[in-house]
Image (cartoon, rainbow, N blue to C red; front, side, top):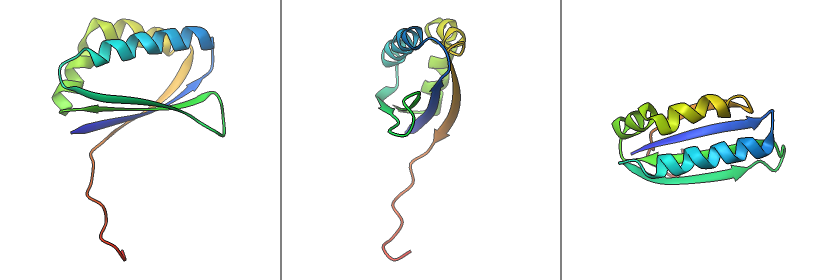
Amino acid sequence: MLTIVNKLTVTGDRAEFEKLLGEITGYMKSRPGFVSHTLYKSLKDENVLIETGTWESREAHAAALQGAGFRDRVGLLMKHATAEFEPCLEIPAFPAGQ
């Protein structure tokens, strides 16, 4: 499993950002290997959103990124936000006492 963590900071038109993010999310959910998506709003800054996406594999995620449904929209989205992208692998919990 692969989890993607994105920090998105809205810097432009909020309505256009939300429209494009919704379109990208809909596209990603339709791709093979997609497992889940969650979007969070920061309590410290209303312009900051954190999203997580879980994929069956790195390969499935990479394939989704190559599709026009992602590529055509992400450039437009970045006109209204900045993004910090972090691919992550889950680790087992640390044993108690460490």
